[in-house]
Image (spheres, rainbow, N blue to C red):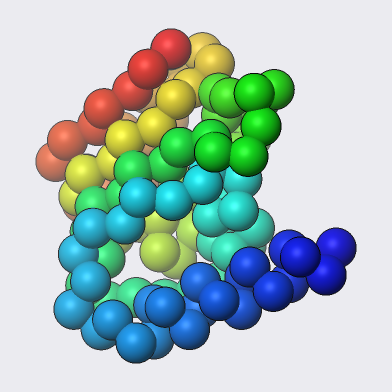
Amino acid sequence: MRENSQLESQMKVLLNRAPRLKYLSTDATSFLKLVQSNIAHPSLSQIHLKHYRTRINRYMNAEQCSILANSFIGRQYEVLTLRIDDRNIILDLVGKVCNLRALHCEC
């Protein structure tokens, strides 16, 4: 639990120190927790979500993708790269992420 709050704090510090950051490659599970805290970063437009920490749950499910797409920061993505467990998620992402120009999915 403490590790998660420390990770969230470090990510917020990183985003605050890099105001012109456009691209971020990070752990999907950790980033989802951060997204739920309503972070904002005006220039972040490309995100690559990976699963570094675990071999289990390496693919994002519909609920996780919905959290991402409905988040404040999620709506501004132009390029999104992630692993999903169902191809139907693509339709949801395309419909909700209004600035999306490129979507790279692995199923």
